[in-house]
Image (cartoon, rainbow, N blue to C red; front, top):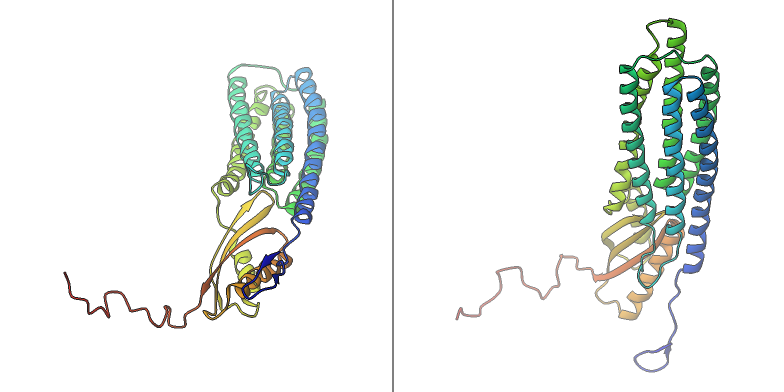
Length: 334
């Protein structure tokens, strides 16, 4: 405890229990990692089934779908590892924590989606140019089963991603959806090839080529928010306004002069400038800053760190003894 002017001891100011904050965030990260493990297991099984079925049934669309599932598997590993790193608490070298590993993982998954789309497109073009037999009928039934599984996975992982606020988990979910799209288009192509007969053997390859374009679009949609977060894009206007309202509701705060906020993994960190009465003592303003910090964190638990700077509030915009610029100076020019 510190001595205060005039004697006695200054009691410590209350602070947000950081251990509880990081424990709560750890639980969110674990949920995200668990969804990645489930997705990884499903993707490996589906990739094996589709690759075997595609080779035996002479369907390149099914082989392309297997490639997409393998890409999903790698993506799930990347997401799992990214969330594992992001869940670590702050340390000496990373005082703000390791949250940036989460959007970095999301960006890598988006790049993997792009890479899978390019691979599928290149192979589809090759299959279109090279004559081959129509796919076997059983490949269609296999794809219909795959579509159901991937759509269930998409909805499950997407729900987890929204609940924990993770771009990486969200990207992983859309990786499952891109696989479902590939499977659906492959099913259409195989159906055309089977119904059309001779001359329609390449329909499944054309379907794979179309799917590659859709997958590229999905990759771009996933990459943009991850890059924004890596570049410290500001928080949403709704969250900024809500945090500002909480701070200005605290007695003693005249107004929030400035509020900056950025996302760090699953949580946010903020820098806030408060304007208070010029007559307020250092002790009083220090306590007020702690009270505002706790108010904001209590109202919005996703904001785990708030750095507050206190400034005097002058009704006229400047101290009464301060002259306007270029005015009030009678000092002769040397």
